[in-house]
Length: 377
Image (cartoon, rainbow, N blue to C red; front, side):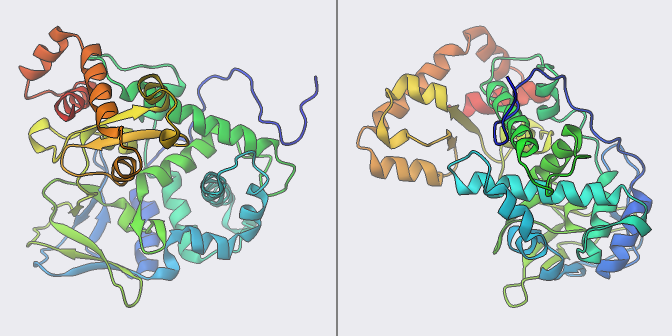
């Protein structure tokens, strides 16, 4: 039967092929100059590339100030590429946020496609800083070992039982579904040259490089190249008056020191699911566990208060917004939560629990994720 326009394409596929990551130091230099960043900032060629200083820098030095006009965020994308958002309104989702989320990724994908062309043949009329950002992002990061990519290729990591595997697989499949639905649209806003690998790269770049700001999730060119540390030596703050993001040193830096910021108080499951790395267990600032739709439905018997909730995220150090809303709206939430926790613990074999508890210096990502989940429970 012929596929109709608007139908999501459903066929078995192998894992997508990502564009190859290459040397990033040269690609970062034009972006650095456009942003007016000091010459002592440079991109490293280490196994995990980051930004280092070539000269001594004293505490309190402003290393980077990126104005609002340079930010890659939804309001700016809607200004620059409004037709993309109009086209994505035809996607088969009743949730306007999901349609806009697909449009965000499509905007990034179109930027990357344009960056693959010789500079004289580029067609997108976007800010010059965005063009330099796209040039750098095309070669910036190797996502071949990201958990989404592993899930798409059927590579499940060894290690203790963890609900994160199922959650990551579901999220990776969702990205593939979004791509299929975009391909089914009858619009020139989805270029024929856009393959699944480039779309996945676009999605992962936004997933791993945006952070919350006054205008929603925002990718700030230049700042997105800074790596995370639980003991950062620099801060990244919003200037409320101008809307700029300002990176300032928190301590003196020596030549060769890497500039490190904090991505937030994130557990290893969240770090791994989003960025593809984990911290040593002793440095993990909090523990979390997440319950998916299927698990919620089994325990909570299709309770109306849980309808439309994709998952329930619990954090050992704070009451998440979704948990607060659930407790306020549903008198039976406390009892259901106890049942959820007990059920999850029962699914973890006692031997696995003993192994995790007796190994505080876990080195594998899967083990660290499972350890955090267990402590969170």
